[in-house]
Image (tube, rainbow over all chains, first blue to last red; front, side):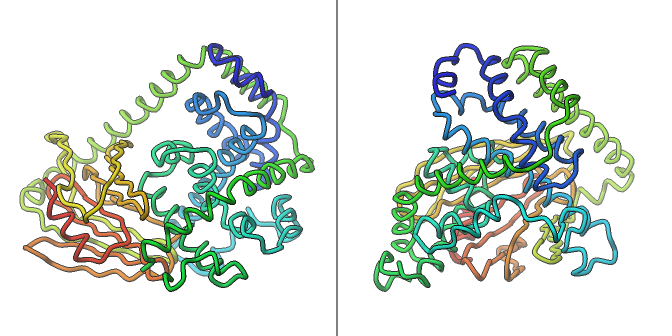
Length: 196
Length: 233
């Protein structure tokens, strides 16, 4: 897989097939875990994969581990967008808006815990990097794309299918939340004295 | 409001730790192997067909064309609605520039009470000529009927400027906000909406004229944001 992405630059179709063969099922598993039904999960996978095809250039020269990381961000963001869209529709369409509708019953099953959340529960030790990894996915994703994958804000907007100003807002807010977390952790010395 | 050096230091902390965080994300990705549901054969074949149908570069075009067609259809639909309502066209000739701000839960919308007769739109994009002192890197992006310019500053939050053509009365939907204060005010005979997210100090200022809705987002006070908007030319 490592060589695949670096050598097939002139064969985009093969790269796309290889990505699908390698990660299609995994994308579906992730989407299903978030959205809890086959139809929404398939829509999310298809939307995400179309976005990956459109941004296939971003995947060239990327090693297999980072491809996994990127695909995870792409599919997760689609699921979050779908989830938020449905939530918004519901808030708008019901005249009986109440806290009850905040709980997304058909998307939330009290007996089911997503694998990534179980993983988080295992690693709650307060290291600096964990403070980042414990951020909400929407904040973590923009930080990963910007600081690790080296995406520009415009590219992040395209990858996550959000507006450019929302990218800016999310990055700013992610930093502010992280600063607050650090301020109240044993790593507060990392902050510049008197700057908070 | 967070100070400049505070965020700069956060940048450094993030840069030093993000690789470890990325590794952990990959491990988290692998956890989903345990999910029992698998892709159906039917859907798998559908996706393979989609990839096989044409090469990737053509696919890009066909996706764009499909979206373009949909957009055209939506445009025609909106246009039809518009022409039906143009019986009261005088409403557009002398618009009262007021905002309609709705909040519900964590969401809010900032709408205009005005729809532009966009058969006559001159898509003339403008940008601020004044920004607070500093060196900025500028990047432009366009999405649908909105142009975004982001002014990056090395050691601070970027300023995001957007200019959107008004085609209907629902111009902005922002979500996931916490603890916001909304202030509407009139300055030089223009209406503005200032939105302050108290928890983060991130502020937004909206303004619109006959054609465009402008928005500036930055961790700056209302005075500085107004000055930026005033400099748009």
